[in-house]
Image (cartoon, rainbow, N blue to C red; front, side):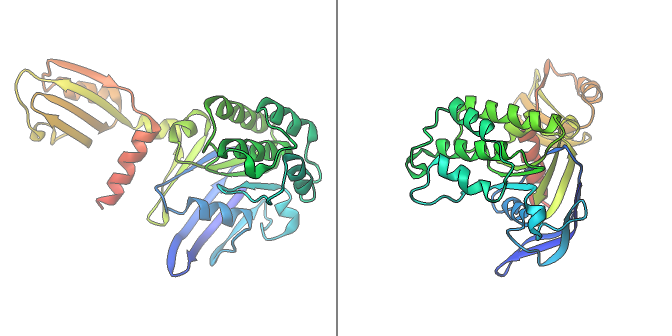
Amino acid sequence: MIAIRNLSHSLGNKTVLRDINLDISDNTILGIVGINGAGKSTLLRLLAGVYLPDEGAIEYDGRSPEKAETRQDIFFLPDDPYYTAFMTPKGLFDFYKTFHPHIDKETYDRLLSAYKIDQKGKVRNFSKGMRRQVFIALALAVKPEYLLLDEAFDGLDPLSRQIFKDAIITLVEEGHTTVLIASHSLRELEDFCDKFILIDSNVIKQQGDIAEHVGRLCKFELAFTERVSEELFSHLPVVSLTVKNRFVQIVLEGDGDDMTEKLEALSPAVMDEMPLDFEETFIHDVRKGMTV
């Protein structure tokens, strides 16, 4: 288990994270979400031992990420991973083998073959997506106990994303790995993350099960026979409301069946419940925080 206690960190004079407390269970896939500059990447760097926290502590089963033996169990894939000007995929494997002696060459070769990567080509000449594929292959070949991913889907085509997600799920299901992934691709996270945290204004504003979090809201489109105003819905737990003459789009907090009954009492001519995903829920959560 990863335990984060009273964690605060600043970059220069700017407070990035403040009083973060979080327990992350083993064999979990945790999505870390937030707007640009929220502190997602900083949190991952603290967890990887790249940064030392200004205040508080991080422990992996009671061990600090500052210790080399702990970092051997961690693989951190940043948004801009390091490679030298003349590094090839083969050279990268040899380089990472010094830090992770148990890295699996067969897995690495298999993934690069699936991605159609030339192991003798220079990484600097690869496209952004190809470079990402190489480092994903490294991460999966290490089979770490803790896998930390920053914008892991960036630059990947749909097939590559699916191969990556399937491999992550396999690692977790086999009981090897706990995954933390920060991403702006919320629809990707919704597909396979167990839990999430939302970082906003330097703190964790929301956390929990993604499906349960999305399920707490419901969305409807309605049409009335006459023009209506926003006041008609003032007694309801409105999260978002758009009224255009006779047509209404509304997001409500609460059970869909209960809200259906309340909306039917307003006598709309037409009413449809619409799908709501994690990305839209995230937008509502952040906007709500901005108005506080």
